Image (cartoon, rainbow, N blue to C red; front, side, top):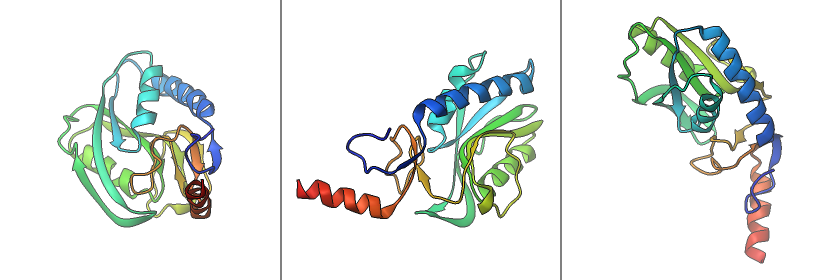
Length: 189
C-alpha cells in the first residue's frame, strides 16, 4: 500500500512481498558464497533499502559499502556511466556482491563489474531487487534476482524520479497522469 499522501500509483510489488523475496535471496546468497563472506557494495541511492533488507537476513552480519554511479537524467539513461563515490573500495582478492535496485540497460552494472574486477576483485556478482531485460543494451548477468519486470518506469522502495517518491514502501509504476490528478485533487481541498 502506498503512503496516504502520495499519488495512488499502481502497486507492482507490495512491501511484504519485497521483504519475503529479500529473505529468500539472502538465503541463496549465503549458500552460494560459502564460508568466505563477500564484500557487499550497494549502488546508492536507490539500492539502500534493498541492501539493508538483504543484510538483515544474511546469517552473518556484514557491513554494506556504498558506491555511487550515475547514468540517468529523469526517466532516461544518458548512456554514460560515471562512478562518483566508492571507486577506491579495497576489493583486491575479495568476492564482491553488488547490490542494485534495478538492472535496466545494464550499463551501470557492467561498468561497476569491470571496474572492480580491474581493481583485483576475485569475482563480482550481482544481486538486484528488479531486472528489466527488455531494456538491456549491455548483456549482464543478475546472479540473485528479486523480480523481473516489464518495460515500465518504477519508483518507490529506494527508486525515485528526480529525487521524489524514493520513500514509498512499495514498488509502484509511475504514471504522470495519476500524479497530476492527485495534485489537482489536493489543491482543490
